[in-house]
Length: 280
Image (spheres, rainbow, N blue to C red):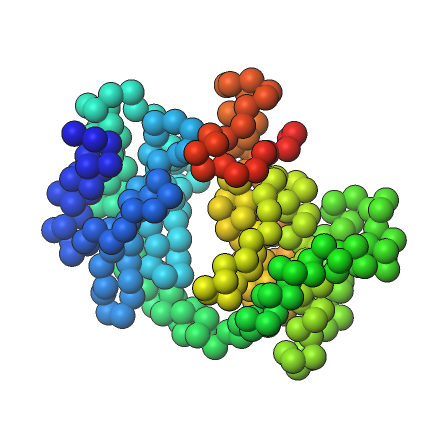
């Protein structure tokens, strides 16, 4: 039996009694979901791109957690457990799904009320227009260059660049959305190009959806413009630094681990990685 079939079979056996059904497989991720009191709750088994190992994720449309969040144990280290044969594969899957029964179902219940409130809040969020997305895709290089020349950023460190973006966003807090759209596109251009320089990737435009963002080799997709609109609307500019550092650090740790194991010239498999990962 193939690896994919084994994952679905084990998950179905363990999760069906709780009302979870197979929902989708995408990007090395198997998702089982159920609807409970208006929330879509999911259990996901993810395989890493570079080896035979699995990790567990759970979410309910707002709250998201892996083993540490699910168990409330900061020392829990049950992410990306390796296996070498079918017997070990099944054992790893069951070990992860034990967490769902022992901790995860209760955690979903605990987070339900908060998540409903957050989802309701999300429904009131503003979103970029198709015109904004298209402008970002077509003009991000020019906007970034103009920003760098205007603020003389050639000698700024990465941290100082992020602080500059933060200050610029603070300046337009509370202004009408229609009046700040061009500024948000400009800042998203600089931010997105910083990501590409740091971890590799390329701007991408999805014409059928009218969306643009950064397609990052080891992160797949970042809707940079939506992130900036959210940060601006929430008036929480510290998220600029948090989002950037959290996401970059996760990728950097992964790349350094792979290069320690496979050599400094390691690159992700060409089967899914369209762009080279820079030195880290």
